[in-house]
Amino acid sequence: PPAPALIHYHAQQLQPNSCYKFFVRARTEGGLSDPSPQCDVVTQPLPPPLPSNVGVDRIEPDALQFSWSMRDEAEMNATSVCEVVWREVGKEEAEEAPALAGLLDGENRDKCSSKEIPCSDEVGGDYSCKLIGLMADTLYAVQVRGKNGGGEGPWSPVVTQRTTVPPPQQPTTFYSSDSTSTSTTLSWDHPLDDAFPVTAYQIRSFRHAGEEMKETTDGWQTIAAEETGDSRLCYVVENLEPGQEYSFQIRAMNQLGPGDATDPLKVSVKCDVPPPPLQPEMLEQTPHSIVLTWSPPERDNGSEVTAYSLQFRKHHEEEWRMVSDEITTVPVEVECPEPRTGYLFRVRARNALGNSEWGDQSMFETLPPPLPEAPQGLAVVSSHHSATMHWPHQEATVTGYEVQQQKNGEWISVVEAEQVVAEQLGRISSKRKQSLSTDSELERVRKRQILYFTRENLAAGTEYVFRIAGISSEHGLVHVGVEVSAPEHASALPVRGAVDGAGRNEHRRVLAACSKKFWGGSSGWDDPDPLPAEDVGGARLGAVREEG
Image (tube, rainbow, N blue to C red; front, top):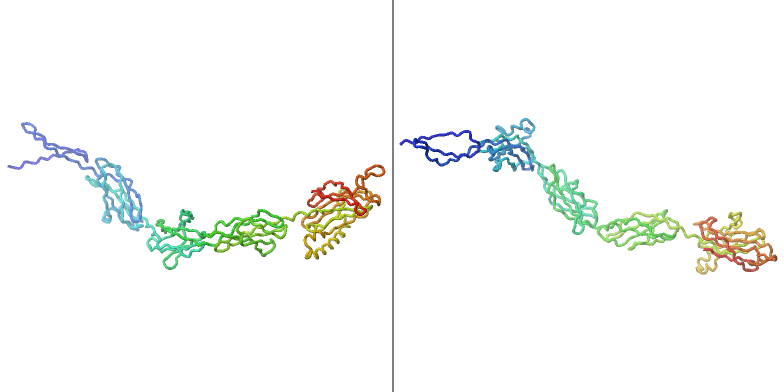
């Protein structure tokens, strides 16, 4: 029998990318047959839409990572795979900006590499692709399109991106040499990369403090390395602290940036003599000594300070004199020969490696000598028209004397006394030189010389006030006063409290008083104190008492 004829039916107005079920039944005069087994049919989708937001996420020397979105797709044009094509762009092509759109069209398509990226079942997804095996520092053009069972979608606009240069190599054979107490020389091999040369080097250093490391530089510091002539580079690190341990790292730089750093290199800096101590400071001063102290050096340069040396000199002299070079504790008292004199002091420190430089100088002045004592043991003998004053010579503190008389409330120097007292002092000085080598201190005190002066032409029955000024070459004058009455008659002065023929107390008397010590001038006197007179060889000798 003849084969049954095939019947064709073309279903139209179906939805793209949709699933349909079809059944067939036959009709005769007797009615409809049962349905045939179902036939499942899926319509083809529409071509994918244009990819959007094509861009570069990561740039490497040998790779580029791109990303894009298919957000405009729907169920009817869902993308199955995304095709990425790329190729290298020559220098001349890159300069022709209008031609960039055709870099991947026509004959250029044969020069491209391609890669397909499977898409997910979710509609409107984001995708990325990493292109590897690229040339460093090279410009590339990239396009993306979607594909599905319904065909190929449109190409995205051309995106161009240049790969970066590779980072510089890590410096090798890194070590130190020629270390001193304050520096060390670091050296490493010169990297061989002519295509992407190293443009600079950077260093980072740390100082060891026990188990911790403290960074001594503010991060990485660019340095100027020098070639040594044997394909090596070197750099001298200076201003290091003696006796300390450091760690150093080096890394290379090129137009991309820094490369990998070397492992930390530990270097021990040699010990050294200590730095100078700080300037001496004065704690106390006297006319003949100064007490000093000072602070130790800020660091010991790796060796403990064991002693100090101290020198001094007068401010107008050149030669230094050693106080001691074995000082282990402070403060130190320095004997200075002269009062009121400026002295310069300097100190240096010493450790096992030797002495430091001398520190900065300090100048201090000794105090003036103590005030000379007023003449003591002052005695006076008066007659009708004169008064003779006696006092012991104060050899230790007084170099001269001046006799003064009070007139109308003012102190007037007695000129006649100058020559008399000066001659006595001259004789005393001559005798003193002869006795210095033979007499003991006790003997010289026992032989202390007595000075005197007689004031003539006094009016009988009149009170006079005198004072003796002790002259010091350092301080000037220090006085002691005495008040004297000249008797009216040749007989001895009556004792204080005697009654005359009229039954009145005698007012003619011998008065003596010492002033308190003071610096020159004529102020600061105590009121004279009347003291009893005593017979001494037919004359009245007033006793003297020191006040204060």
